[in-house]
Image 1: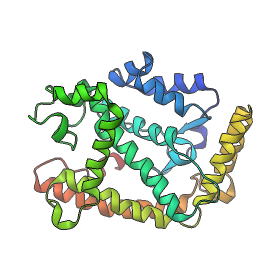
Image 2: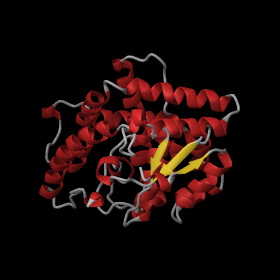
Image 3: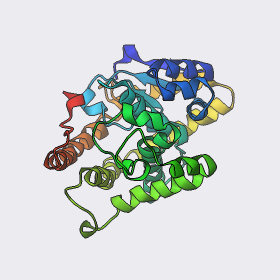
Amino acid sequence: MKTDTIRLLVQPDEIHDYVKGLWSDGPIRRSHESGGAVFRLIERFARVPRFFYDASNETAEWTHFSAWWGGILLCDYANPAIRDLRYLHEIYHAANMPHIGGINLATLEAKNFRNEREASTYTEMAVYLEFPELRPMTFDHPIFVDRFLFPGGDFHSPDPLMLDRWKREPDQLFQELLYARIKVVLAAPDEIDPDDPQIVWLRRYGEQGANWLKVWSARYQLVEDAMIALKRDTANGDREGAAARHLDWLLSDAIAEGSGIPFAREAIAFRTKFDELIALYDDAMEKADQTAVKNKSLD
């Protein structure tokens, strides 16, 4: 992290105000300002102090799971609506992540992978039911949710039955969408089309998850314990002290090892495998005559 860029936000109103300034002019910002679904998400996010930062090594930090330990990487995209989705995804992670003392590796896998699946379902699928006007503003190529919400292929014509269900039973529909994604991620190789780029994109989560767990197997409890302390001290009324101690710990020699990047070893190890999986996704996209990722955001 570039330490001189860290924005440490202690009080809930500071967090709300700062996040409002990140959104582009669109439905996500309006939902935050009007007390809608995004406002309620930020309320959960702001229960403890948070910080935002610029990367000191963007290649390593772009795929680092900093939301797990309380930080959100500042970023930019050519399309501001896609940048909004990135922030929404990371904030959803942080706002809904439980932390558990004495956790074993199998439980960490269950806990963090559920958090990942829920965050992805929310920001890759459910967000377009909450804000159907958002879809024409984001990706030019098809994405997985289009199969459900835009069956005719017109991003301006969402399925009215899906929108009605989202109003009547959002929790039930969210679960159905989540398991539609999981079905793809966990399918046997002969159950999917290996040249379908959206399917390849989803299945990368399973492979990345296994690698992430291996990378973090030695030091994950340090994160859990530090976040438990942050939550405990915040609940006891010491928001400012809790925030300062947590940030000092992340930047300490024991954790950053003089690099400025908390858990730099884990960041670099995970990034190496991530690049290999993105190459597979790019191959599927190119075969389908769609725009490949090729890590453009990291050039």
